[in-house]
Image 1 (cartoon, helix red, strand yellow):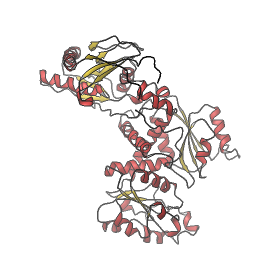
Image 2 (cartoon, chains in turn red, purple; image 1 turned 180 degrees about the vertical axis):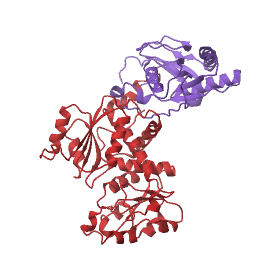
Image 3 (cartoon, chains in turn orange, red; image 1 turned 90 degrees about the horizontal axis):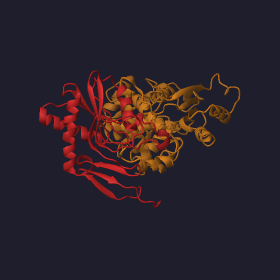
Image 4 (cartoon, chains in turn brown, yellow; image 1 turned 90 degrees about the vertical axis):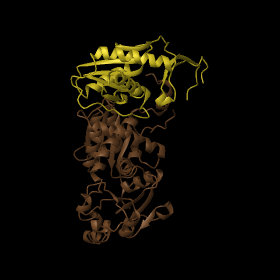
Length: 323
Length: 187
């Protein structure tokens, strides 16, 4: 059986084929079960050393990766930009090369610059996983969103997903658009004009100016976090104003022709982009997203750990059915 | 796709049925009856075989023994050499394995590495009173000190050849075939 391997790194969903994305989602299924066991650990990555290299604050993503790594029996080290030699002016590649000299196997990187993960991946032998790079991509977040949509609705193809909020600055939105489009979903965006990138229409993405219209159209709303600093930068007049015009509320959802599935990548600004009654309501899958995040990251780590795509393909036939 | 070698029929449907009957008797003897017995098939064809043995036990004793399925992919020791498996099947085991007699069921016993992985995985789920191993085909060629307790058919197959167990539920027909190494023509 010829299976397209994932390659050395996971830098984004843009370079992946639909088949590769589906393979990650399918591989995540058995890993969900691992987290439900009394002993939440399998030995698949025993002896592998993984460095979580975070140049940007993150709690949820880093913890999710760390659980995924530990549940696969890998050894992990967390490095944050604060208090490390990164502050002393050591550059990204030097940091990574020093880590490699200590014989690591994988790097999970978050960085405020778009392209940082790719830059690193091209310069070190270890597998690199992008945990968010600037405004570029956040592939594992999009993968967990895809998995959650598939779990909830049973499919992704033909599902209408509207990404709401600060699409312009959002790597989550970008990765979601790539992933959703590749798997055949209908994608729309909704937000203030100042927070939507230009040219989306040409890419086949529907643009809604009013949240009411998006709610009428969509099966799924993926409500992005509004970065509070966007207000001081003049993109929106005020948080209250934003909530009044674009906030996802029970009252607005009640006017939809059918129930909508509500996603949010977290952390939420309750009462700004999403009201508490929606976030905690029956159609919110926000906590399932968190659960699925661990499973999806386990799948990615596992698939990359093979490391040698040619071998992986050859092995499908060579080590036959009787072993 | 590897070049197809020539195929030799080793067991037909009738011989498989006979071997399973023989295995069922052996399993019941080893487990001291059905009371504590749990049949655990290894994905993929071990699961089907365990189900068939379960049906055979139900036919003769009217008792349905609990069935489980084990995918040992994440417990393999060859991720480095063969890379990740394309598809990981379901692992489902009865809740309480303590003091049960578990019979691992698989289609072919070869190097013993699959069974080693299965033992590790079962240990993560509980502490059975006893774990036994029942296989349809023992083809020899062990790389670990592991032997089956119940064997349907003992064969001697050289390392280059492959033994394929085909089952109605998965493959549309019942047969055990030897697939010979495709000569020395490197393709």
